[in-house]
Structures are given as structure tokens and as C-alpha cells.
Length: 432
Image 1 (cartoon, rainbow, N blue to C red):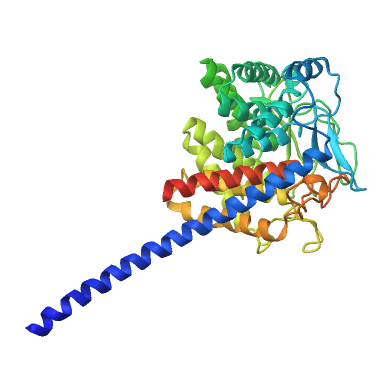
Image 2: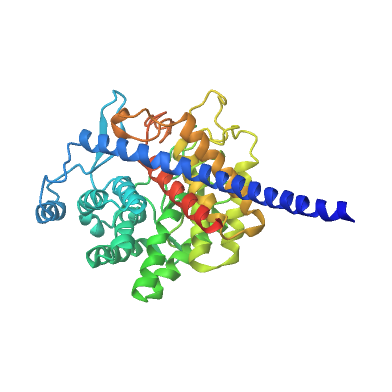
């Protein structure tokens, strides 16, 4: 009896030790998760400082009024960085370029994470030089340009001048919607890229999978204004794209050409992928990210199912490398000696963190995939500090078949990298 009494406290002490050890291990695991986020943002802060020096921009350079005036008048042709030229010099682009909004978006992400007013001021200055794009009705890329810049700014500041620009941008975007087709027209040029040219017709009404990314601006405008027109157009575009852009295995065509008078599909093509029937890697993630976002904004089950199927296509593909950073096209002929596309990887990671919030059954799998991408990109694809004109990541591919931005840094790879890190951080905080 006395032995039992003496042993009981020892058993309780052992239980307490196990509990303490478990909490300690969990705490260390959570700290490790935070470390990669903090370390990458610290690196980004230094590298973006270097980028700004390379762009010859200082906080005290110019008044807001002066910047605003030349933005509206188009006095300044070049605005923000996109990539590097083949000779290593910085490639800056005008506001009309589809990539012009990503760099200010990065600066807004820096402000969101650090709360440092310096980043807010710089983000503001690099955003307002894009204002004239709110009138640009010759492009579908309003979301990329305006929502990544002005949208981020409005979310973090509630500045009504940003809101006004965004609403006008949404109004401009929906002028490209054709109710017969059920889509927003992507491009105004009509040249089809053929691997074996023949007598094929040119495009009449091209719609690219990338256009899914621009619908977020319309969903925002619907909520902000109460005008359901924006919502209805965005949903219709997503539904039409779901119907016509995807193959049976849930891989995506790049370009679907429609007859604008009947709405019938005329052609299924690529422009930046290897071939018309190949799976261009960034195109797959435009679809994944787009349908996750559409489900978040609508709750329509078919959009969530589509996102899940696209994710499964990507991560069960036999040509996906072990580190989960894809080649530029899943069917590129010289794999494994083909360029990678880090931009596809970082956008995928961001989409997966978001998808994990809406599919509880597979959430851990999505997070694990995304974490693996972030870890491998951090370890093997990051630029050295104060190099490559301030870009964060290397080894992306813009359009190999068109001969540009091959194995190069790309601003949108950096943008979605920071977005993925923020989404990872937010998930980690909710799970603690």
C-alpha cells in the first residue's frame, strides 16, 4: 500500500513532464514557421531598398501633387520594374504594361507586414503614377495593374482617392464584356501563334486563362458600390471559362477564341505555352488561384471543386520536380533540361494557403505543398543580397517560345512570394 502511494506522485510528475515537452515542441515548431517568414521579409526589406536605389527613387524626391499631375498627363513613361534585360540592366515598364502594379503591391505588402510608414509612403508614390490606367479600355489587365496596387492601398489605408480610382477601373474593365460570349475580352490583337503555320483563321474574341485573376476587382466593386452588375459579369466569366478552358484532366488551355456574334468556341490555342495541347505551368496556376478567389467571393461550390481538381492536376503531374518548382511548361520537350518558372511556384503557394481555408479535409496537404515551395524557393531560388537590381527571386520564365524573360527574375514572382508569406503568417496565427 505504501509503495503505491509513493509511486503515484512519480506517475503524475511524468505526465506533467510529457505535457511540458509537448507544448515546448509545439512552440518550437510554431517559432520555426515564423522564422522563415520573418527572415524573408527582412531580406525583402534590404533588397527592395536596393531596388529603389537602382530605380533612383528617394522618398523626398517629389510632391504628391507633382506625381499626380504627371501620372494623369502621361509625362512619365516608365513607372515600375518588371524584369532584367538580357544584358542585366533593369527593365522598367510604362503604366500600360500588365506588370506595372506588382512593384507597388510589394511595397504595400511590406507595409502590411512591418507597419513601417516608410513602406506606406513609397507604396503610395509608386501607386499613384498608375492612375491614368483607370481609363485604359484596351486591356483586361485592370486587376493585375490596379487591384494589386490601388486595391492593396485601399485595404490598408481606407483612402477614398484609391477607392475612386478602383471603381473607375472596374467600370472600364466591364466595357470589355460580351454577354453573348459570356466573357471579358482579353486581347485586342488577333495574331495566333502556330507551331506549324497554315491557313488557320486569326482570333476574333480571345480570352486567356490569366483573365481569371482580374475578376477580383469586379467582386470588390460589387461589394463596395452595391451594384450587382460587377458580380454578375465576374461570375459569368468564371462559369464560361470553367466550361471551355479546361480539358478532361483539368489542365487548361491558354487561349480560347470565341465568335463574338454567336458565343461559340472557334479555336483552343496557346500563346506562351509550348504547344496548343500542352499545359503551360503559369496558366495552370492562374486557374487555380482564380477559382479559389471566385469561391471565396461567391460560395459557389463548383468553383471550389474546380480549384481542388486543378491543384490535384498540378501535384500529381509526373513532370513536376521534387522541389515543386515547375518547368515553364509541363510538356516542354527537353525536361529535365528546361527552364523553371518560379513565378508559377510562388503564385501556387499563395493559392494553396488560401485554398486550405475552404477545404478542411485536404487543408494539411495544401499547406504542406505550399510550405515545401516556400522553403525550396527560399533556399535555392532567392537572389543574393544587393544583386539583380533588387529582385527577390531568380529563375522565372515569362515566355520561352516568344524568346523573352527566360530564366530571369520577374516582378510578379516576387509579388506572389510576399503574398504567400503573408498568407502563411495569417494561417499560423489562427492555428496557434
